[in-house]
Image 1 (cartoon, helix red, strand yellow):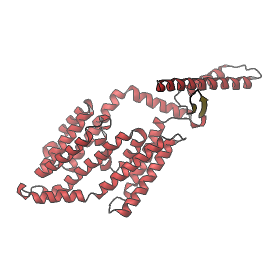
Image 2 (cartoon, rainbow, N blue to C red; image 1 turned 90 degrees about the vertical axis):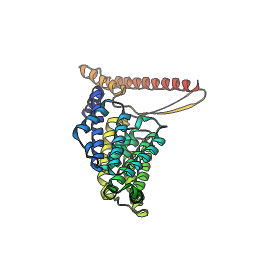
Image 3 (spheres, rainbow, N blue to C red; image 1 turned 120 degrees about the vertical axis):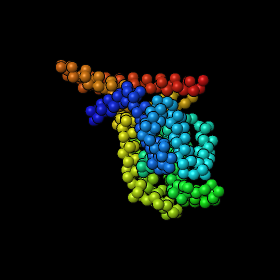
Image 4 (tube, one colour; image 1 turned 60 degrees about the vertical axis):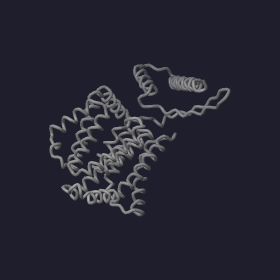
Length: 350
């Protein structure tokens, strides 16, 4: 197990050291997949379906702030919709404007979810976003996830209506409007998916914050199980084409992805959990301390092991001495925790 934790530490060190390379590369890949998917789904403005244009836009998105990527994707979607029909252009602009009005009050911390979510839905990996977001992100991420789902619905409506409305004259606007409205009314899958994704996200987020051992693993499994149960219930009460068989690869990928996140982002040694109780004039304090595998707790143990290996001759009562030493070191750790908590409470009271 020690080698596994060392491998984890090595991967984290590499990611932190070369983050200035990995982050632009990931943004480039995300931008290229987004732009190429829009062109593939709609693709009626062939001038934009050019490899040089896609690479140039992706490179710009990789080196500039995240909002630039969002703006470029929105412009590309609007232009492709204009290539379908004028009323499709108006429909997309109005929908994106409404989403912008709802999202502008919120921080752009999770703004890339507006692109990640449609891509996940396109490739059948939407459970990964709900589970991964619940494990890593806060409740504010739920709004971009739902908005990204709506953007996917907008692209799907335009792509499905395009063969029927492309080439229709503007004066026959009733035909175009009818096709677009029918496309919106037929999206019961999106409504069900919004309910499921929001529910799974909140379940995973609530469970992983519990003060229990293996909270992340419990949240991950409960989230996957909730996705399956809600999918069954939705299929029973609503007419939908989504089935557990179709979504099962995405659910399995979500479980594997969650385990990877748990391994790299939640390295805790639950076997060495300490429970501390102390008091002052006003409060009783009950503290549960779970050491991290990269913390000083384990580094201190490694140093003790190294020192023990160097000692060739040990006294006869070495076991007693070592146990007393360990007890003293644990008392020092507990005292440090108590002092930190007391300082924190003093700051809070001030």
